[in-house]
Amino acid sequence: MRLYDQLKYFIKQHSTYSNDLVGANAVKKNSTILNIQNKFNFSASDMCSNQETINTIVKQIIKKDKSRRYYIGKKNENIKKVNRKVYRYECFFTRKIRIVPNAKNSFDFYIENIHLGQIPEDLNIDIKNHLETGIMTTFAYINGGPYKYYDKNSQSVCEEDEAFDLNIYIQFSG
Image 1 (cartoon, rainbow, N blue to C red):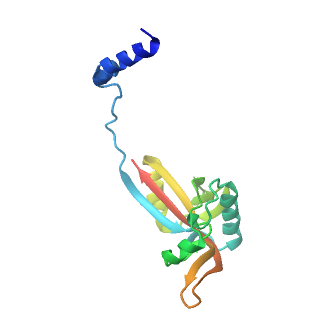
Image 2 (cartoon, rainbow, N blue to C red):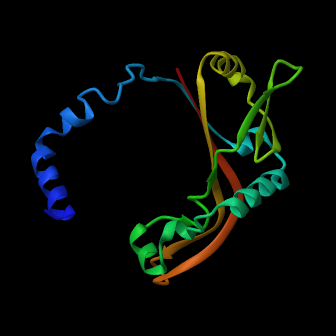
Image 3 (cartoon, rainbow, N blue to C red):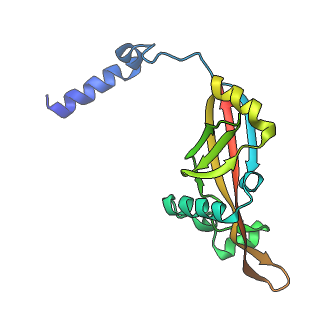
């Protein structure tokens, strides 16, 4: 019997008994499920009035993004159908966010190792409690900048620009 025939015979004989070969409990299931304790969502302009700082962070995010999926991958023909502003960098984001306690019982907020400002005071107590007890997940998405939209009057796709901002999302699980 050739090797091919032997393998074929072996697979045929044991294919219905794969649990016996591997074991029914080969992978131990983890019964601990993380629950979302709290979510915070705010913009960079809430923390920092300096547009240059926000622009510097945005440039870093754009520079490091590997996808290069401008206008969320939509062409001008698709923008007609969307019926809203489609920003050039709206799907660009970073997870490189740090929250660092400072001497003033507040927290300094860094995105891409650039100091953005301090977390809004009304969130300090909640953030402190969650940092001590939970697992933090963070994202900062680019908002604003160049965008395209379909103008019904001129029946064409128009391009405009507005100031950059960042939508910041923080989630604590435990």
